[in-house]
Length: 182
Image (cartoon, rainbow, N blue to C red; front, side, top):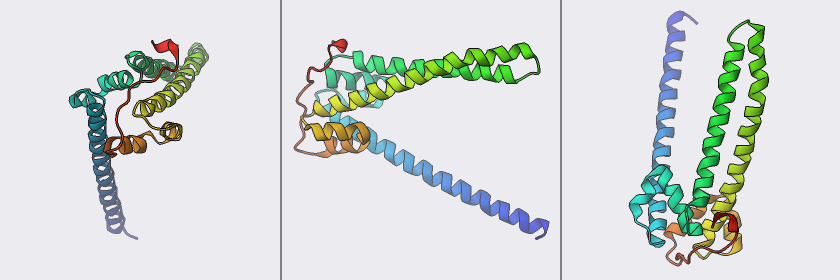
């Protein structure tokens, strides 16, 4: 294989990658539009204005209000997300500084980054627990049975589409579960 054949193969591979990434971007945009339409419909069913579903952080707080009657669970979820980002960012920065030079005194930074990584893991686990609980009670606030609520923990986007487009599903209001968020 000479140089021009190698360049042709690389050009073909590059075109394939661009087409593949463009197709994946198109699928992502379509799924995002469907998600926001479903979220809009769920907000309207709950008596909230639909435009609130389009604002990323605010929609989490409004979903919390729909599920629990207040914003506290959504705020806890956002705090865990910020905590994860903060601690993981510090741990990664310390590791980059520690491995950037040959100075042995910088190696101590790697040891300091371990507790930051562990705190990030704790925040990640807390996000998963809060997210699962949030999915459960959000589905429950639309009057679905326990099996639907449990399925929403694992398949929330699909259950959310069913809740939004099912004409027999109506908002019934929040249930009282954990008193921490009242």
